[in-house]
Length: 282
Image (tube, rainbow, N blue to C red):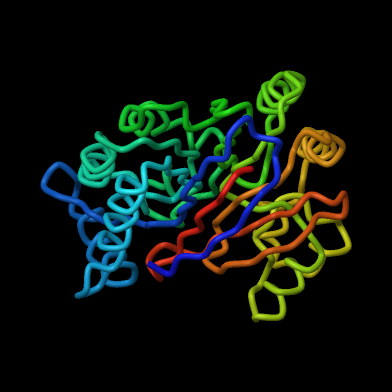
């Protein structure tokens, strides 16, 4: 693994560790899926796993490391690259003896990868099937460890629905120090510049302001323009002193920055390059 380490001060009752991984992009299909999906699996497997099985190998290595260290895994989505019975079976089987929490990414609900505009209606087509593979609620989960609230929010395609804001508000109002985990990182100027300077057509972050997204291709502008509910959720996050750090994935590159409200945000790189982040919570 390409393992990095950070420490976060949360006034925990007792220090503990977490292993943050993200964007594994497991890409299997079998006879239960149609020919189109099997062809998709062939191409995506070459891209993410290849002859050295790197997607599965690094994922399995992460599970083994966490088990030996006795620490919980937090996965922030895109564990699977698209919806297939083989992908979900693999995830279910590999995680059955693992102490984990997972938040969904956008690929968890992708039927054929890029074949349609993805929104909540699209997501709903496979939500029940995908959820059945995981123990925790992949839309929203909160778990307290040693007095620290671990809050995971699934990906809603660069949006935060009002129901998610309401659940987040209720958790934050418990008054506990919190760590926030989500698939897509929040807009932060340094992060935006880092992605855009790399030649990307857009920054792939949630909550970028209008003057920053005006240059996006039309489809990406529509996809990533924040709505009112999303802006309200971001304002809640930025205004709440209980949130001590944010952890995300999605960008396939590691990054560490600070939101304009002072909350640090850590983006862990794609797992097919071995990235994993060990977090010591104090």
